[in-house]
Length: 474
Ligand code: FCB
Image 1 (cartoon, protein in one colour):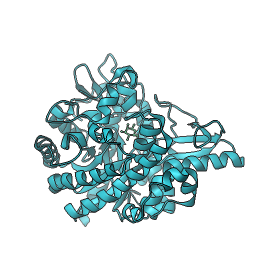
Image 2 (cartoon, helix red, strand yellow):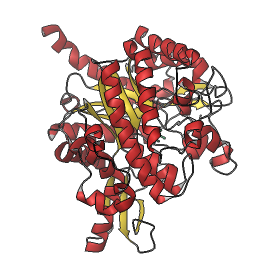
Image 3 (cartoon, rainbow, N blue to C red):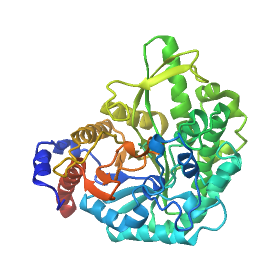
Image 4 (cartoon, helix red, strand yellow):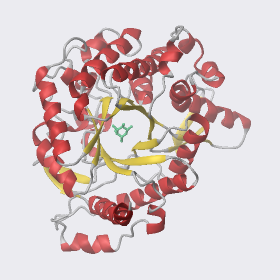
């Protein structure tokens, strides 16, 4: 990057990269990307004909987000996207996972798209293309139009049908600019944080509704795959599920069973139907009637429709144990040690290898993209004007090495999209949790690439120079 300070240059020289022979193990078309989501960066909550989503309502309800933070302004990306894309090019990144906002494209959640929103996203996607940036676009990253929540939200089947209609219209409007689509981001969070723990929008606390939401999100994915195939037959389609590495606290049978229940209710309830075509006996027994009562004939064929790649978001290893008082799943859970991010999440790179190997062995032979992985730390702008996020550099090196280990073990991993390009609105945690490779000074909206951005840029450059000779002889 042109603007690296001499001090950052020294720190970078002291920060090892990934060994060339390990880097060379990755497939030639491996993508080194960055990831964001609309509500977390766009701002302009009341502009361009955008309607309220459940996150507007939730974040404006006192007491539900840290410091009462909301996404009204966020990173103001809605107005600053040209400079942001320039910065991405500067960081050397040509693969960008972003999401489009449902409540911007369809204020009330159905009907014709909002022309201003289409114009905005077309300009953004054309801007990406002009800069040689390949977009991977998520249709739903948690911003359900509020009118659809008022009509029942994800616990109601009709929401899945609304989503398929929105997907069809959006892909028809933007499909010439996008080759790769993701239907949903982490339906586990939408269903269980949104409708069971209430930690996320819409903040309901009802187990049966959360389970119904999980099935309807799966159904929404399946219906959207069909809609996307119709609107853009050449497009590649997948879903980004969070896959957590869940371990029992002890090797006693009660804790092992508790870990299996948590796995069923967080990983398998989403992976089973999409990749194996059915809810497993374990998932059916753990979720019981709440699940079985909402599954209709034919749903599993819809949900299991073939996709083109598997998106895996990974953050944590979690420890689980049996606890009769521990809610509907009768368990307790906590992040594994060492819990070292500012979120208290674990930093255990081997977990990513384990998760990738597991997805490939137990669920699907499809190419896998790590569609999110990253960490929040207490980053700050130091007096010299630098952000020296050595912990994130370590994190990225560890987790990218974990990806290469998975590839060496035969897993077909094709991409890694670090979370996140910019510091942004971290949902219920507000702006206090910084995940970006680029620091955002919210008072001025100035962007400052952290040491990790320089490190990632160097890694991508090393990778490019490895590929160059192959290209010339090819
Ligand atoms: C994931 C979300 C993403 C971001 C990261 C930290 O669960 O998909 O939007 O909040 O966590």
